[in-house]
Image 1 (cartoon, helix red, strand yellow):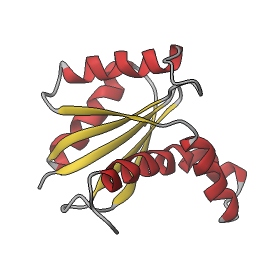
Image 2 (cartoon, one colour):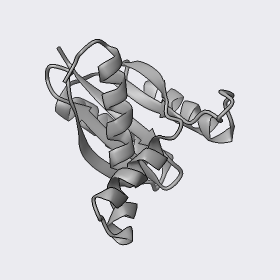
Image 3 (cartoon, helix red, strand yellow):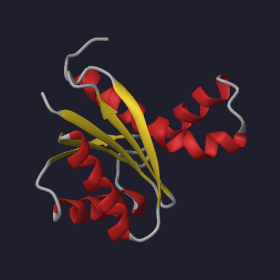
Image 4 (cartoon, helix red, strand yellow):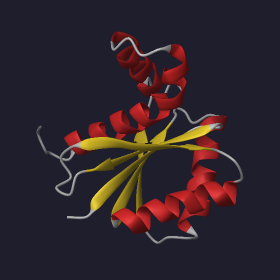
Length: 140
């Protein structure tokens, strides 16, 4: 089985998570500081090649009523540009409350505010990917 990449795409950072080779567990991999769209996309393409990614799970920030807002549209546009560079299956995953849950997890772990800022996107990407993997029938 090929690894699955999890992405939490924000305006300032992209959280990156990756599955184990069996597709059972997610591990936070990196946080990409956003710069130019082409550089951001190339960073992800490099990860896809390095880890031999077979699928991407992308957090889709829906509104609480289930509709798609401006941020969701930005995420979809970014993924469209990424798919022009790599032919890979993309699954959009409802990420409502993921960042809130990630923040809570880091607070419970007594992670300082400064450190939280640098890892919250990676933790959110990890939660998105793990939720997807769990839905595929794998049990930890």
